[in-house]
Structure formats: C-alpha cells, structure tokens
Length: 334
Image 1: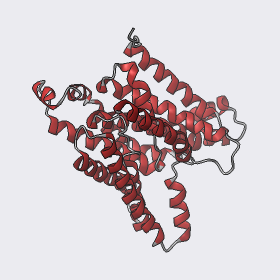
Image 2 (image 1 turned 60 degrees about the horizontal axis):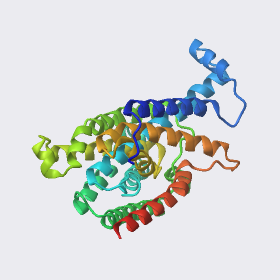
Image 3 (image 1 turned 30 degrees about the vertical axis):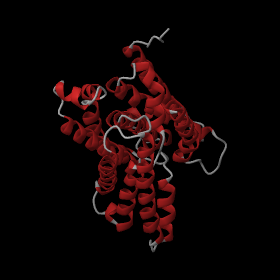
Image 4 (image 1 turned 90 degrees about the vertical axis):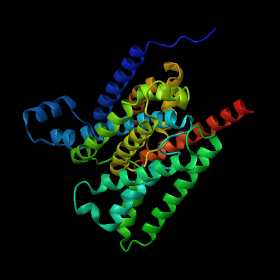
C-alpha cells in the first residue's frame, strides 16, 4: 500500500515553525549567562548596554546567517538535483562550494577584499558560476551517478589545488591561518554587515531558483515533454545556473564552505512531496535552514575548545550519509 504524503501546506508550516524555533534557540544559547528579555528590551529602547550589544552584534547576526545560508544550501541542492536529474547533485559534492571558496580566497589573497565592499561576495559568485557552468559542460543533463561524482571530484580537486597554491605563496603567515580557519566554515563573529552584504545577492538567487519550480516539474518528464509544455529549456538552465552561483557564492563568501546540507535535506524531504522537483524547492530551503541552525547550536553545546567549525561538523555527519546513498544507488542499479 503506497505511503500517503502529508499535505504540502502542513509540511511547509512544520518546517517554518521548526526554523523559527531553532532561530530563537540559536539566539538564546551561548557560552555565557544571558538575560535575553532584558537584552531585547534594551536593544528595542536604543540603550547601548552590554546585553543589547551582544544581542545585536553577535547573536542575532549569527542566527540570521544560519537561516540565510541553510536556506540557500537546501534550495540550491534541490534545484541542482532537479536540473541534473541526479540525487547526488549538491553544491559541496559537485565542487561549486570549493570553487566559490577559491574565488573568495583569491579576493583575500589579492587584497581586493579591502578595496570595495562587494569584492568578497563577487569573488565567491564568480567561482561558483565558473564551477556550475564547467560541471554542466562536463556532464550535461541526466548524467549518471559515477560521471557526476567524478566531475565534482575533479572540480573540487582543482579548486582545492589552486587554493593551496594561493596559501602556499602567501607572504603573510597570519593571513594563511585566517584563511585556513575561514575555509572550514563557521558562523562565529558574523555581523549585520555580513548579513546585509550577502542577503541581496542571495535573494536574487532564490527568486531565480524558486521561479523555476513548474519548469523543473516539466523537465522531470523529459526534455521533449517540457518543451511541448511551453518551457524554454535554455532559459531555464541559465536561470538555475545563475541562481545557484549568486546564492551559493554569496553564502560561501561570508561563511566559508559548509557542505552536505544541500545533499541531505532534499534527499530526506523528497518522498514527502511526491518526488516532484518543483515542490521540493521551498521545503528544502526551510529544511536546510533548520538543519544548519541545529548544527550551529550543536557546535556551541559540544564541550570542545576551541569551538568546532561548522563546516567540519557537517562534513563529519554528511560524508557517511553520502557513502550510504551511493551504496544504495549502486544496489538499486545492480
């Protein structure tokens, strides 16, 4: 007897509530005792007390970046899986995050980061755009699992090699340490300036990806069927590539590389939306936001000093998930 799917609206509402609850928990949880009510009262009244400054300058930006980055990674993962028709497509696995990190590192290394405000996110976007176009040129649509993973490994390895070269040639050892820790991915010490820097570019990317929902449903039936339904496939692919590059590039430029959110979340939620790529987009976005907030809360609760980097935690948890997924796909294909 086939499993009944929950109503789409109910699923979306549950994920939004989970994201809201984890956002509140992320603001409330920290390393020091904190009167959250007093901090909000002082902040809203415009009083520059210590609790108000901690709330406005540390905890709110960190929680907001968790929501924005998680939403981006979940949404981009679902969109790429729909475009390439492969459940292993994800910004981290297919090299988009690594290439975005390379673009941001080159901006750091060249000193452009201090030249103008948008240099860092533009570097990340340029790297993500090059990787996405390169991946699409290498594997095309409907690529097999092995081809997709190998292409992603190749792009990640090349981006990693160029990043290592930039670090190796850096004349400043302090910059090397700073960039190395940044590459591990973290939401620590992010400010409202980081939020305002990344949000506009992410929002444009989200709009491009979410507006492709109906076309992705058509594309899942095949190129010819989608074309007969009136969808312009060339325009659709351009929208998805541009949307992924804008949103993921802006996220990586601010938080560093945080992998596997875009792989795990769409895979878990796909059965609940009837395996329809278009319906998966928005729920994956909120699922990604909830999962990233949960991971960020976990790194603060773990008794590890210095604080475990967020990208390290998601990699430790996500890599076994990828292994199990590849094993299952192999068994199903046997």
